Length: 192
Image (cartoon, rainbow, N blue to C red; front, side):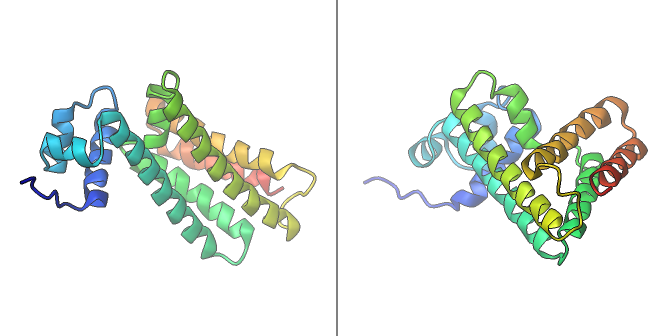
């Protein structure tokens, strides 16, 4: 009689995600994953699938959690301008304090160039993030808090790509003051 597999899949996905986040996809072995998830290999294959299927679940989970957190933070502010300023400031702080970096960015650079399924998922995630930012930017424009002659989607893309550049700068220079100044410069320039 087959044994019934019982475990909290969300919890196990979280543990696997942390391994991928720490080591990267290519450096992560199936043994690393089963050790971290504390399940046997056959349970992993039978319930979640192979390493790639598990990774896809991990990046979807990572993105869903990040978007939920972002939406909650923005909802805390009556003003879209205040929400954007807080978002930008928080991202600068996170870049300096998060040693692991962004799993999304790691995925884009390590795997997306050669893996169409990952690239498509990351494109979808990016579109959702940019659309949400663009809605927030448009609200700030509609409320007279930002220059409304600019395109909200382009402004959202500009904000998002600034974050990537800040992370690159921090990795290379380890200068938190520089990151803070760049975030202040971005805020100053988008709210002229």
